[in-house]
Length: 497
Ligand code: PHE
Image (cartoon, rainbow, N blue to C red; front, side):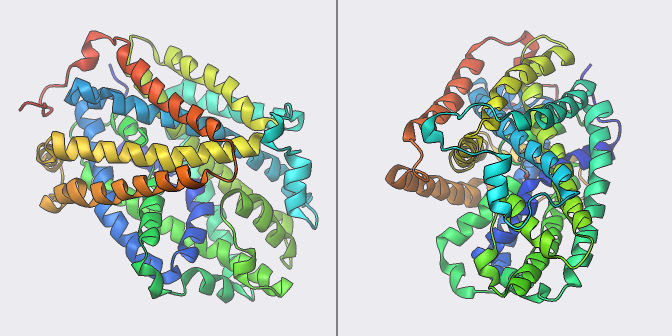
């Protein structure tokens, strides 16, 4: 028997846990600020309504109806579609191995917060003392032994959760992590808003620059943020929803996931940027001179801001890194589950065996990211996964479903158990709007990559990553699965119906 979520709440929390990740905390505020500020809300809302929610409904419906992770769900629609599922699973594998390293750094910083160990120069501390970074041009630089213990801690937590399975593991982890995350962020927001200079941070994030709205790049950024933030097109949501009972209403759940996720990212952004606004005020510089995203925001700018706070610095450092940890872990387990579901559904095996098959290779590969050149490899893998992987997986998904398999059939299925029906707009969003925007994004990303490369990294590494994704998709599709794998459940719409 396929395991099922014990309660609908378990599923909703897991989906929100996956969606609310580092992308919400460290990516959104900066993307919003640099793409039109308050004016960004317009393309952002448009992207949520035309792509985020429709694809979420699509993926929930696919998982629930075909009762299988991404490879199985696509294979049960049409065997020729299976490779797309594996391509998405391969992307998940790639993201998961480097996401580990980020959670490892976060664990280190939870410890450093107590003494504000980064001192006056958080950047040199991070690059020099924590990562002991050397350039990837000189090889890996050897293992950074300091990171080994935190690395093993993260692995132990993750392995514990994954082996316990959907209800005893993932459900439990989300029920612990999400309240912790909410609480930490609420305190950060209250503290942030009561600081002098907070308004400058918020003005930086929200002042509308309407002139930017005409630029295609801003729209691409909005769609990119919505995709990444909702964890769509990388097998996760299909995998989670495949454990839902058939009668579940997924339409309202999709709206709920999207609203919570995006509401949370705007809320968290307010806290983070008001504290950065305060730092700029203390240092007498402009917010635009200190603002950053990603690794730079989390490990360089924010620790510096924490040190400038008037009181309780260690506590606020701790709250920030605890939020990153809680947000990171629930996303990490979702992406691992996406790979496990894919494998367990295709070949005859127990949950324990599937988990081992995924975790053991991932464990060894993730060592690359705790070598002294780990940051470089991470940066590049992240770039390829996001700019090439997810976008391409998204385009193929909407083209196959929108144009080759009639989405109207899935709309009928989705509406069957839904307390409000989705109209034809859903089909058109998938068929036209997302196909055009994602197609354009893919072409423009590739053009830039081939023209300029990425940050001077050797191109061959990019090719190795791309080759891995494509080869994994071909090989895993080719290996024959158990007979039931290809059979669609009764009542699920077939390709030729
Ligand atoms: N939605 C996640 C985020 O915002 C994306 C993600 C999911 C990344 C799972 C990694 C693993 O961070």
